[in-house]
Length: 74
Image (cartoon, rainbow, N blue to C red; front, side):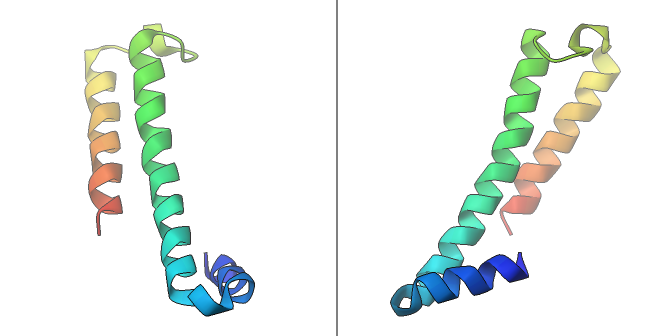
């Protein structure tokens, strides 16, 4: 992420703070979106091995998805 900050600063010198902030927002949305999409596909049965998961595995995966969302809010 540090290397990408330098690119954002170099490409948008007049808006350096906003560019770096937007970069961090996009990275956070990508991380949260991936967890939510994985959870959705797994619940719909489209994910490989999704039907083989029991109730305990789904609860664990949902807990991890919630943890990713909460961690991205910092």
